[in-house]
Image (tube, helix red, strand yellow):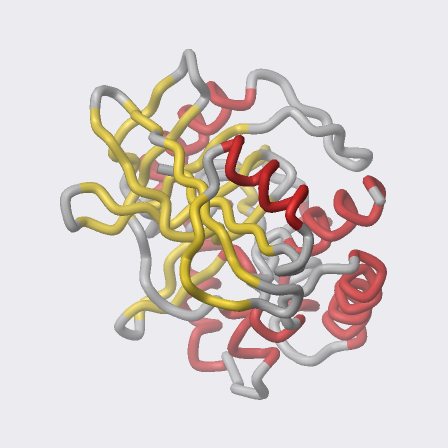
Length: 247
């Protein structure tokens, strides 16, 4: 089920009527604008029903949700086809499958792909529970202890002619181990390897701060009611830029 929430002014009866007609029900909670409502829709992947808990991130390739299936937490990714000015796509769902196989063959620690629905462009993969490298840097925690692990990944990628996306939102720490939670990989180019590009974002560098400021500015323009600090930074600039563009 995909959980969608809304809220409205308690005196706005027409708005409440619209929500009721669509299928929203009251949660009993009150938000900044008034009573909160929730809409849940079922989603099935390869014959299994999943309950969506929350949005984890929105990147250039799709929306990633934390989901539950019979008590097991997983990540469910829905491919989207929104325009992207800086990246050219082919067949996205096939690319995810191919990239996962390339990562697995390279021995890079990544979540296991549990299911793939090519027709509906849905992927289910293991959930890695932990903070991203970006989150740790943002809160002022040094990630130097994890540099040997990412450099090991970079060496494995290089050995098979690949680059992975070294931006820190793509790496999660669970029980002291570094996981590459995105499947994206590309043919190796020296300018995009870890030492020439990725390392610039693994501490409070000018590049990191510039990206963070860009996200904050987009947040202010977006008009979102959630607090900036509580937002998941996975694909945050893509997400916010899209929201600002629509307003």
